[in-house]
Image (cartoon, rainbow, N blue to C red; front, side, top):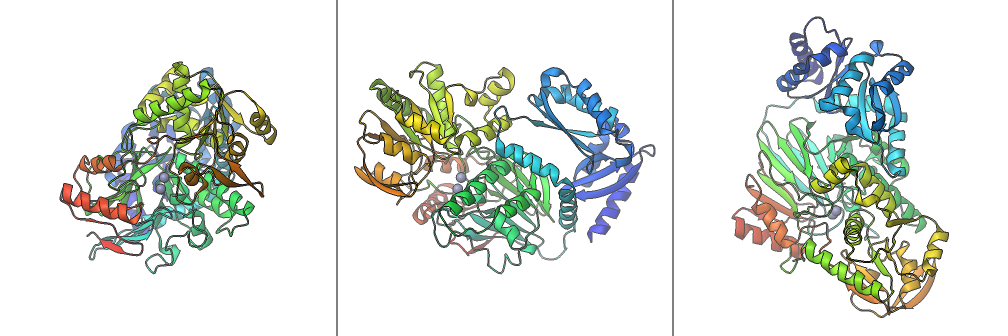
Length: 636
Ligand SMILES: [Zn+2]
Ligand SMILES: [Zn+2]
């Protein structure tokens, strides 16, 4: 069946269901949505059951839009909307998008704009005919979020035609002959970095993650040149589990080489991955490294990005439905569940997961309607990979901070901008609020502030406890005034010379560049200070060397080579990791409901992938495999 046939059939069914006094002007696919244009949006809105009935009958996500001819003049509409929404909602911006008949309302309290059971939104819809969309104003300004929202507004016409094209391609109908499902390992198998897999069915080709191995100077790219992948135009969709560069770093390169399809991810993943990709380009240019793409390709990616919230089930290719679930790893990180061919097969790609409640997130989801196969990370899948619990980690950090501050020293913590920093920030805020450690300033240097700002824009993605604190009690520990942003060279120089005790979180996490280097140089020779590692230190990095006890290390700061003596205390505080340890990985699979029939392991050193595969095979009695890059596994 061609897409024209599919649409024609849908139009007939829509006309049968909709009463004749509601005039339908067009029915069209836009990305995964079926959009119905009507001259009577208010009447449509009054009959709430209609959309539900259509969605159920057609098995599609449905959006109703006003026909452009019935939209109230935007100036009059804005005046009316501002009258309807109570002052306390704190509207910071209103934008009209005539091409889709939407008005974007940016507000401090989206819940107030929405009203009880959506009452206010419905009223707006009824009175001005525009469809209101509510977004949260980040309480601390995030340049990234602002720029992305502004950019998407300027390209909205373009985006609409892209979405129509995507929608038509994805609803082209499925063929009737033999079915199959297979997974091809393209990167990040028996290794960490450049994560990428192809999910290949009779009717669809989907890439899951397109990562970059940042530690590699030569071949940091997954095997995108295999015949199954090329030409890139044959790929139906790309799904990104989370923003870390080893999962999202090379997505823009697809647009450089001819891909023009959709990228699905959560809204925070879209924003964080843009931040990290832009930063990656900036650093690569500064280090005179070869860059695989330019910012133009990141913008192209944004234009093609379709965001999904946790739990939204969406058609992403003929015969394939995707649902993203919380992965507990970093903000917006997702476990991706694919439902293939009306009950033919279900496969879950975990991405990176944390199966434990952390300061920021709920544990990774492992309950699904159905699941036959799981493709799972094995970062800490080795026999010795047991980590202390969150509680033990926090106790240890508290001891380190107490000891250092007592002797009037400074605590220096190297962190990654996304994930670990916010986790440690909340732990420290908690300690200071409970007066377990003295009330000293906690300085944030590097991209941490910007990444934190993005966190504050999406409280819905944090754990239950934080969500309640932020949304119902108006308390956000990430906004505490103990945190001080170091936002200029001068301010950093001042801080470096300041004799008072303090805590500093700075990037990069493994001491291979970034502002942390300057603090290290200034403070390493003072015995009262402590350098505290909270994240994984890869072999070959300066962080690993200092962790191993090197007392004299070479440093390069702003192009100048020096050697420094490490006299400060060096401590490691395990347990803040965003990854599950071995025990948690095993429990995650063991508790999975329903029980999967087989498991495929990736995202770990070779020995860890193999070890976890054989352990799971023994304990759960299911077939397991740890394929190498370029191998394929047929599942059905
Ligand atoms: Zn990750
Ligand atoms: Zn990863």
